[in-house]
Each structure stands twice: as C-alpha cells, then as structure tokens.
Length: 530
Image (tube, rainbow, N blue to C red; front, side, top):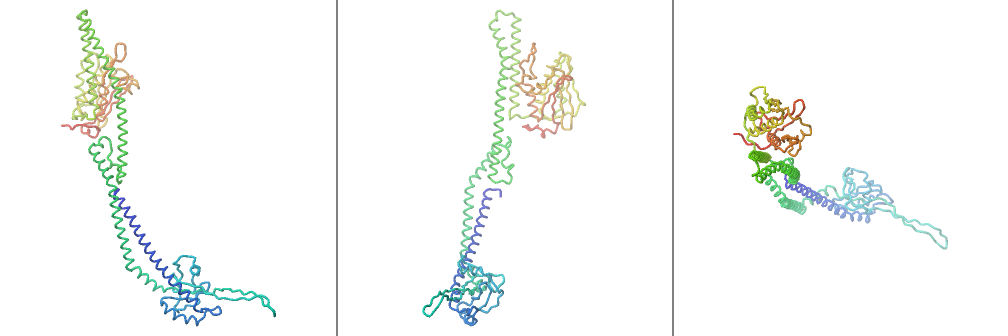
C-alpha cells in the first residue's frame, strides 16, 4: 500500500462508496418522503369533506347521532382511515371508528401547522392508537358561527349593528391506519422501479470506480517511470558508494512522491557537498601550484645559472671551478628530481582510485630494516639511534608494507636531519590495547611552537618541517614528505600526532591496527591480500 497509485485508488474507491451509499440513502429518504407527502395530500379533502357535510357538534358539544351516521360512510370511502374528533387543545373527544386509543391527548402544534399551512409537507402528528408513534394525517377545523345584535329601537325606526363571530369547536383528525401505511410503503420500496434505481446506482458506482482507477493509473504512469529511472541511475553510477544515500533509505513506508522528495534532498545535499569539495580542491590546487612553482623554480634557476656560467666562461674557468659548477648543477638536478618524484607520489596517493596492498608483517622488523639506511648518517653526526620495545614479538600488523616503510623513512630521515650532533633518536613500539600497535619517533632536535605544530602538515605553511635551513638560518625550499605521511595514515584509517617540548624535543605518534583487525578500520579502498 506504499504506492501512490494504490493509495489514491483506495481513497477514490472509499469516496465513491460513500457517495453511492449517500445517494442510495437520499433516494430511500426521498421516496419515503414522497410517499408520505402523497398520502397526506390524498387525505386532505377527506377531512374537509367530513367537516363541511356533517354536523359533528350540536350546541357546542359532540353530536352522537352525526358521529354514528358518519362511520359507515368512512368505511365505504377508505377502510384504512381512522377519524377522531379533537377539541381545540388536542384532547380526543370521540373516536368515530370506535377503536381503542392509547392516548387521550395529542400534540396540537402539528395540527395547527397543517391547517394553517405554515410548514411544507409531509407533517407528522401523534397516532392516537400508539403511545410512541407518529404518522401523517389530515385535519380540518370546526367552527360555530354566532350573530350578535346591538343598538336602539322605537316605534318609528330601528337601528343597530349585526356582528358575526366564529368560535373554534375543535378539529376533524384523520389518520391512515399505521399497519396499512407500512404495508403500502414496503410494497412501494420493493417495487420494480425502486429496485431498478438501486441497480442503476450500483452500476454507475462500479463504472465510476473503474474509470477513476484507470485515470489514476494513467496519471501516475509517468511518475512511476521517473522513480524507476532514478533508481536505475543510482545503480548505474553507484551513487550510494560515493556518499549518496539510497532513495529508499529514510523513506520507508513512503509513496512515490516521498521517495522522489527524499532522492531530491539526498542528491541536492550530495551536490552541495561535492561543490564545496571542488571549491576547496580548486583553492588547494592553486595554492599547491603556487607553492610548487616556487619550490621547483629555485633549483631549476640555480641549475640554469651554473650551466650558463659554464657555457659563457668555459675557456676562462679553471678545472677545479668547472668541477665545482658541474657538481652544483648535478646536486640541483637531484633536488629537482626528488621534488618531482614526491609530487607524483602525493598525486598518486590522493587519487580516489588508490588501492593499498595489505599484508601481514612484523612492524618491529620493518623498523630495524629502515634504521640500517640511516646508520652511516647517524655515525657522521654522532647521533644515538635506538629502538625501544618490550619484546621481540607481538607487533604484527596488517597494512601496506611499502607505504608504512615510506612513513618510517620520512620520519626517521627528518629526525636525523634536524637533530643536532650528539643528539638522541628513539623509535618506541608499544601495545596500548589488544587491537593496536603504537609507533613513537622522538628526536631531541628543533622544538616546534604550537603554531608550527598546527600547520606542520600543510604544504603551504612557512613552517613546513621537512624544509632545510641554509647557512644564514633561513628556511630553504623543501619536499612534500609530511603531506605524504599524513595521506598514507588516512588511507590506513589512522592519523599522525605531533608533540614538542624543550624537555624531549619532538615526538611523532601514529597507530596501526594489529593483524586481523584491518577490515574494521580502513574506510577507503583496499586491495585483497594474497
């Protein structure tokens, strides 16, 4: 019953059913009222005939002889009539037909309304034979006419005023026998014409219902087609996987209109989010291009200057100077290649199609392998590089080993680069709980301020941690190492945190899920391990 067509069809059917029943009821009431009105009009001349042709009162009291003579005439006119003689207040003075009465008094108000014709027919009054039944009737007033003389008389003249007055003696009250009336009305109700009317009305109701259902079906056909296209497009473009909720979600129990409204709201919200992301991405892209342009331009211009000097002054330069220029040019080429490779790596990691290759490995063994690459650099700077772990086992994780190696190499490399001679670098592994392995890399190098920590992973920040310091203490252009670290952590469903204090230097922390917990953590794409 969630379909709009089904709901409208049910509503239309109920409306037509109510209209049909109302029509049948009105028809029934109309036929009943028509019959009662016809009966009352038919009996009106009878009451008038009785009143005008019979002396029912003599000297202001009922005339028994006239009443006795009237009974046979009524039986000849209509045996179903009951004739009563009423006083002006409605008290029953005589029952001409001699039947037993259940009332001695009836309400006089309907009689007056009938006689004075102040209300439309049919008018129902009390039935004297029953205490609680009313029936249509006919009535006619009975008057006594008086002549009053007044004035002075003498032998020669006679003067005076003659006045005629009418005194109401009562009413003739004629009622159609209730048994006869009900039998007659039932026969009218069961007549062929009334049955045909009911059948016709039912046929019209059925035809109207069929036409209404067909009309609703045609009107909702395009709406149902639109709903089908929305669902097909959702399945085709996999909108739900990109953050769009299924049109059925959140609209359970709704009809097509509610489904469309929910789909519109969901898609609109998604478009707004995508537009915001595009605007933020465009802003970030422009800033990245501006920053990289500066970073790439510096080694490129330096390289160009050395090469131009060699080209212009080749004949005047000494052999040692030429070697120095070539060495510097080669160094700038290496730096330029390094920046470009980092840019490609960050671009690859930022791609929505990026897939990790998880595998189970010992994080402690990977840390020892990465340390070997920095042993010589630590010896040259007289740095203490050490690993702290409670035991040799229990540090197995499930992650992309190449990506995690890139993170460790970047963080250890930065620690070696920015730690002063005779400083300390510690790599500590721990298990804060049964589900995670925590890695902390601490060095006693440059202390970072809160502002620097806040913007440390922003490639547009002037405090970018991976940049080098020249001989004058100014920051040189640097790479994208920490942005790459942050992105790798995001792909693993984790994050990296930084702390800095004069008592210990700088600490980098990140967590990885222990082996067997990977699928519950990583929100992005991840290739299945072999």
